[in-house]
Image (cartoon, rainbow, N blue to C red; front, side, top):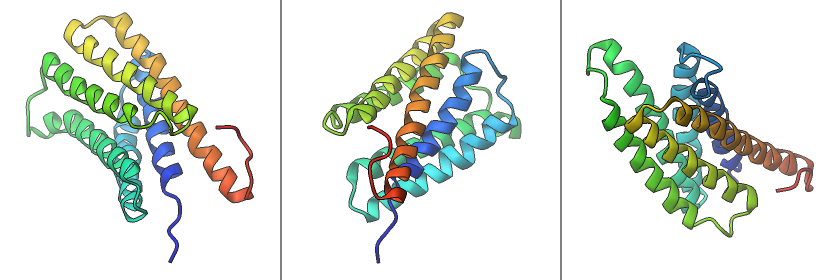
Length: 181
């Protein structure tokens, strides 16, 4: 039995969710139910499924990245929703800064492992490290310009992931190279 390539699913799930949340970080949209739901279902569940499929294909990097970042979106969902349910008080900004700072470190370590993975994949991880690092600084400083910068970088990062995922889908569907990556 041949498994479908889960990489496009993981990339598009990550990318679309990142773009939508980044619209909010850049100041274009409020964080409302559509963003929270997308974080849970597309960013969390769909990306985790892609990571599990990568496991069965023997792709350690894809499995580790997609499952971990799926868990990132699920934990962000929890950070947003648990206080509403009375399960936890709202997190302190420094704690969120440390939380996103740990994700910055993980994204950087993954970046070290993919320099031979293609220009766009490398670009996605470079911009992701910038986004996470900027968000960590924002939570410690509450600097609105830093949050806005993180939002714009997130739009670029997520858009790049959607592009790469779409390019892989088109290539596999057409049986030939359609878009460069």
